[in-house]
Amino acid sequence: MKRGTRKKLGLRLKLLVYFGILTSVQVLVLLAYSAIHVSTILQRNTSQLTEINLAQTAANLDLRTQSYKDLIYQIWTGDDFVAWVDAINAETNVSVVTNQMRRQMRTILNSKEYIRSITIISANGKVITYDTLTPATYENSWLGNFSLSQDELYSLVSQDNGMHLFPTEYATTFTNEDQYLFHIAHRIIDWKKLDKQCGVVILSLDESLLSDIIAPESIFKEDYALLIGEDGRIISAQDKSIIGSVFREEKIPSAYSVYSYRHDALGWTIVQVKNETQNKKIITQNILISGSISLGSLLVTLLFIWNISGQLTHSIHVVVQGMRRTRTGSLPEPLSTTEDMSPEIVSIVSQYNRTIDRLEQAIQKEKEETASRQQAEIRMLEARINPHFIYNTLDTVNWMAIDKEEYDMSNAISSLATILRYAISNSNKIVTVRDEVEWLKRYIYLQQYRMKNQFVCNIDVAENVMDWSVHKLLIQPFVENAIIHGFENAEGISVLDVIMRNVNDKLSITIRDNGKGLDEHLTRIINSGSWKQNRGALGIGIYNALMRLHMYCDGQETVCVTSAPGKGTEITVDFPVETEKSV
Image (cartoon, rainbow, N blue to C red; front, top):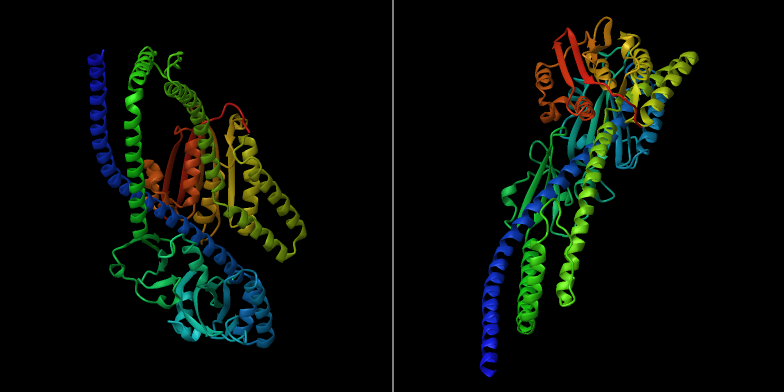
């Protein structure tokens, strides 16, 4: 018995030694691999998260600057400002007109934060300003220190009808602090005489607007962000003293990583500089902790393996045999326990069975989430369809208010209410072609009034498609694009044709105009089906309209564009009809 006992102990001792050696080697290899792998993953994740953050920052930057562009739009298109500037150019009641302008400028300045100055330069060189960075608000704080002279600034802004964005420059010193401003400028336009030179308006914004956007709170004080202009100079930073200096990446210490994102629309580059030393410390600490835990677990396992190896081996054998008997298929069958199993093995079996249950639930949940994501993507695209038609409609009502035509105003407001109610309520609802056409007529009526009936629209819909079902607002983006872009600066009467027919049991919609035509490159992108990879070239309105159509039709739609410069554009869309309505 003693000899048999010694043999038994010897075998278990060998198992213990072999297990300890092999496990130790595995732990060391895994720790080495983990050090490399964790470092790589952390670096990649940091880079990806930073890129996402930069893209979001760019979107926020675009959104914030657009809100101020919308604000300055009220000035350069406002009839009151046009009349006031005309009076100043004619030197008529200059003092009275100047006071009226400054009161309105004060109201606009106080309507949003970060606005420090509003300046208007008339065609005869008169400067009218409302400025909060001078003791006297009628004095201009920044024009004398600007990189361009007053004449150069006026000439640059007044030469076209575009929005001009000037990067940050030193403006003045106010309350013992250096003030830095960036500017948005536009030519004041008299819509009754577009080529008349009235003047220019400049909206001056505090640089802190930019730094607040690009430099959110960070958990690491060493991290910082910069905004770089097209000429490579810094136009926004937490450290105001470096604004205006040239950014040189090679001077950044090696312990820092530089991430950048160029905002093509603004021509600026967002730069984030991150201190990687902290990441290295985190990696080292995690490896030390993982190593300590692994070694501790190994020692504990070696201590217990001697006593439980026999029973554990037997229980594992029973479990393995049960797993082998499990049927093959989409999911394994649960295992059953026996009375002679140890609590640990029972726990493993129970956890295994719970994992199977969770796996079944996860598969079902994944199916539901996939359907929800697709619906959410469709709704997101619908929500991003170009909303400018609403602004244009409101602009029409504004003109009607100015003209004080009450009956026309009543008709316009009624049409506008119908449009908003139709567009906003259940935006992904399926409606009949008849409903869509009636809504389109109201929309075109308002566009014709806004453009002083400079275009006519012919809607020709076959009677046999009137009760077919389509998704709401599928046609409107194409019609809007023809009106807004096709008829822009058109001479004579413009003509828009909307035709709907049944072609091989598909709804065929043709939108044809005699406008300025579509660029050949864009026509080729749409006809080739490569528009999904060329979102920037198309513009968000047409891209989202095509994507929405593509998702609704599961790729069964066809889009054909025929266009010639100066002769107009014809877009034909064919797609299967819906057989039943849904909310």
